[in-house]
Image (cartoon, rainbow, N blue to C red; front, side, top):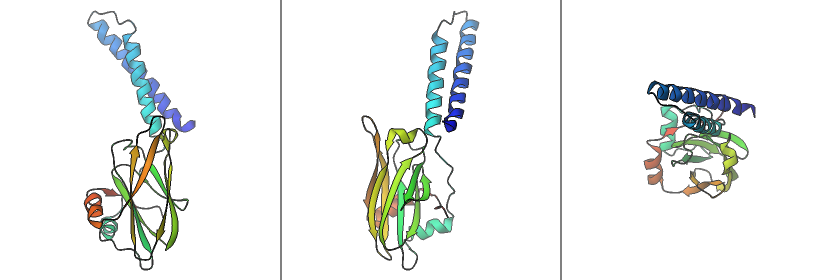
Length: 194
């Protein structure tokens, strides 16, 4: 609950400032304000608090260096390992950070459009992706398994699918290096957690 306190406080401030400002504006025009400024201020305050609460779990990720990004774009995995690339696209929830875990270990948090890459040992692995903050309650997390071979490039595209009650995080395997190069080149790469 404590991570939502700033969102609630800012929401109240927005509601108060908008209501008071709109009331003063109407009075200066010679109009009796009535309840309209309170409704407008209340709506904008609730909307502000809701957006901020959705973003409460979002962290600022550290951008990768140009050399790290180029190594990924050249598809050069570490010797004896595979390279896992996960990129996020789409407009829905693009400002909310989506946590990426590989084998239950935090790798990075991705906003849209962003990507990250990490070396993985050969064998079976699991990717899980989920939101933090209030966005976590509105979106179903996802879990996807894959098997990595030495020298292999494994790439997943993460998007959102709108649902009636909850949205879903979708992971789609991308095998075309041309498609990956086209999609990843303009994106910011987020450095994986150490």
